[in-house]
Length: 245
Image (tube, rainbow, N blue to C red; front, side, top):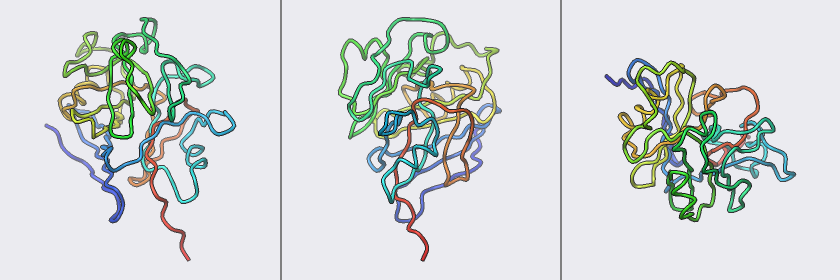
């Protein structure tokens, strides 16, 4: 049974943002649905001086006056220097190429994938298919493994998998107009996490971002997870409330 615990919408006069915490198969998950026809969604890695932001607070400090972060999440695996492990594009500028080889760790658990953001929507594309026929992405981040691939769970996931972590990831609906940022609020295995995307959200494709370092920034529901610095960050940019007085 799936039971909604909390649902928070944007304030009147602002674009609709919704974060929902639900129980799914015995574990709580927080999911934020973002309407890409209404919201300004971007990737963030470096400030104008080339320094990696590393935190939601530093990203918000770098926004123009009158703007703030609405919802944000770490958005892909990174090296010790916090540079992205895989493909990364921000505002049309590529920082890292697509990686198509298998390898150690979760990133190399093929198939992995790329989240591609454009001015009109989003897609999650398996990395080798992406490399063979690269789409035009305004922003892109590669991570892995894929969680859901054309409606099917990643073939390596098993129901009784013993690796459990706080995990976060992203799904895109079939229209490409709705983005779902999800974090598990307790440690879960990959199979459980992926089934949330497929069976609760009903998205055809979903991509794992990370575990253990996973965190969510959603001040409208009183959430601002903290921790060690991260690499790529995905977030919505919204109007800041006018100052009092």
